[in-house]
Image (tube, rainbow, N blue to C red; front, side, top):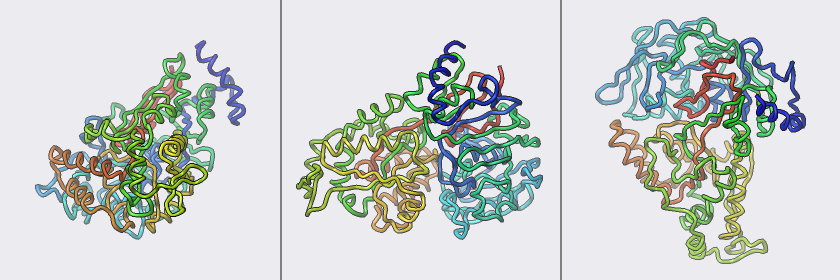
Length: 538
C-alpha cells in the first residue's frame, strides 16, 4: 500500500484546490455499506434514453434501462428481455418471444404491449426522439399475445438487431412515456426494468441509484444472476481530469473513467489500483466537413485540410501515445474497419499548398492566413460544450496551429451550446462538426454521419447521392459478408473526397481501487458497463 499512500499525498494539495476535500475517516467513505461511487467526465443533459445524444450519458442511463437483446463480444446477439427470435425470409418481419417474469421498477409488468408502446413512441415524429434514427425502416409492431412481439419493416435493414441492443431503444414504462419530453429531467418518473432505480439527483454534482431488489433478468451473457451486488451506486460529475484523479487517489470515489494520458502512470501497475482500457470499435473522433457550403464545398480545400498536418505527431503530442491516430471514421477494432486506408492520406503539406493555390487562395493577410478576394480561408469547427471531453478541444487547437503554420488555413474552433448546434443542424448551416458515435454497427455509423436522412445531413441540400445510395444498399444487404465490401467502399469514398477527417481512435479508460471487482465494458457501447455485476471488498 506504500505506493498508494504516496500517490494520495502527492495529489492531496491538488484535490483540496479542486474542492474535493476528503470526508470520513481515512478519506474513504464511498465504499461504506455496499455502495460504489464513480467519478465521471460528463453530466447528462438528458436522462431519457430515447432523447439523449451524449455518448457519456449512456454510461449512467444503462443502469435503469434494459434492451430487447444484448450484443456479445464476438458481434453476435444474446437473449435479454427477449428469449429468442426469428427473421422472415424477406428480412422484413422479426418475431420475438419475450420473458414472462419481467417487471418495471414500479411493479407493472413488461410485456409485448409495453415493448410496442416504446417502439411506437420513438418512431412517432411528434415525439422528436433521437433514437428514431435507429428505426428508419420501422413500419409497425404488433402484440399477438402478451409474450410475442412482431416488428415489421418497410424494407430489410441489416442493422436492426444492433439497434434493438442499443440503450437508446431501451424500455421505459408506458406510464413514463406519458411524461413526454420532461423525461430528460432526472426524476423518479424514469421507470425502467434495469437493475437500479433513480434515488436522487443534484444538478451539477451527482446522481444516485439504489438497487432494484426484484431484478433477475440480466443479458444472456451475464455470469451474475439476481439483484445487483451493490445496494447503491453514485455518479459524481467531475469534469476536470485532476479532480477525478485526486478523488480516486484519496478515496473520495472508487472508480473513474476518462483517465488523461498524464495520469495513466498514477494508476496503471500501481499497488492499490487497477487500470482497464476498452476496445475501439465505435467511430473515431472525426471532423465531419459540410461539403455543401462555404470553402468546404471545394474538394481541394477539404483535401488540403485533410493532408496539411502531421496528424501522427499531433495525436501523439496530445495523448502521449495512449491512442492511435485514425485512418477511417470506423474504429480499428470494428470488424468492418477498412484497413486498406492506412497510410493513404495525410501529412503532405506540399500537396495541400498546391491544392489551395489551384483553388485561388493565393493571398496572405497580416496573420499569415491565406486569402481570396480579401476574405480569409476559414473553416469553423462548431463543438457543443456538453460534448467536449478527453482533451479533444486541445487536439483541435493543436491541429489548428499546424494548419496555420503549414498551409495558412484558419481552423476556427468555436465552443458553442447544444442549442446553437441544434439550430445549425435545422438549417443545414454548420461547417465542421467533431464527434464520435456509439453504435457499433458500421452501417449505422456511416448512415448517421453521412446519410441524407440523418442528424447531420437531414437538412442539407446537395448531398452526395452516390454515397447515399451506397449506404442504403449496404444497410439493405442482410448477408454481412456481402455487406462488408460495400462498407469499405463507403469509407474510402468519404476519406478520398475528404467529407471526413478522422483524427484518433478513442477508447474508454477506467481506473479504480483494487477493492472494486467486476468492472468491464459494454460491447454495444464500447463504454464502461452498468454497475450490475460490480462488487466492492477485499
